[in-house]
Image (cartoon, rainbow, N blue to C red):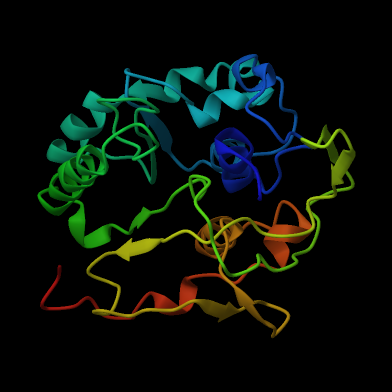
Length: 258
């Protein structure tokens, strides 16, 4: 989405920000009613944990949703330290979802005014934990960002299907109201797939969706890929028309695993 952190994180795990266009109070009040990946996995007997850096700043993303608290699944929100012990013990859940700390000096999300080097150190810690885990041979590490940080991008973001019929209206600096119908993607961000099941040094900017169209990858590509993995239907039209990463997963593990 062409919006800030929390709307994009909600969209990543549920396919929609439910009409929210700012980091408003609703994200901390567990008010979002839509279905999320966390609800989907629980109801189909798959395991998950949302690991959160206690330094905080944003998230936990599983905490956005009313379902998480109403069904007492908030016990699956755990400190980041448990991720490292679970990885070492070979006890990671099927979906390990990590929230780094944000957003000032000493945090690890690379968000201004945090240092990129602190974020890089965090990524290395996570990679080393996964690479040294007994579960490494069954692991796909997806590293992505919730938005581009507000930096200029000379490439206009493409149009995309609306996830729902909700809109967001705000006042521009000139005093004019502007309504976003959530009909386009946000700024470009890097996403890395790291696994012994992913080929070496592959670079892609676009993929093919289920409708046979060549489209830009997006945050919804994550949900589309997980839907194929765990056999669930797309949550929204945005997810339905997203290109998945499925074709990047090989049938045989690499011998020169990263």
